[in-house]
Length: 177
Image (tube, rainbow, N blue to C red):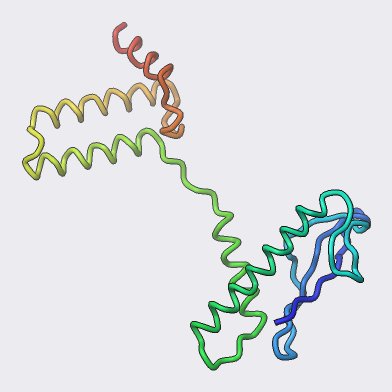
């Protein structure tokens, strides 16, 4: 596998752009694609195929990581498909799909989620005979009170980790008034 790079200038500013790549395996080339590394034109040395100047160490590390990633993808594909030619476009497809999946935002684990999870665990303990009915009933009642408080204070979508002592104090004083 061989990877060739070149600077692709931005349409808005010709001095800015990103590093493009073409993967070549046994004479078969991929279509050009972005490495995801943005840079200034003056910081890319086309002849030496390396970054220079301000921030070059960070860019070189990103380039090294990109190359390692491409080698890892090729090794994985070769292991999954022994004795088959691995087309460079297949590598790019896997690279892009994985990048897209890593960009997806993770769902926030909210306090209502935590209460539902806790209640489920407590019900399972009750069904297994490890928790009496009265304790389960109290737990469910407290959970409903917390949910009511969260709804009244518009905190239903807040992350459970944001439920700190000051919020607990607010809940306590709201319930006692």
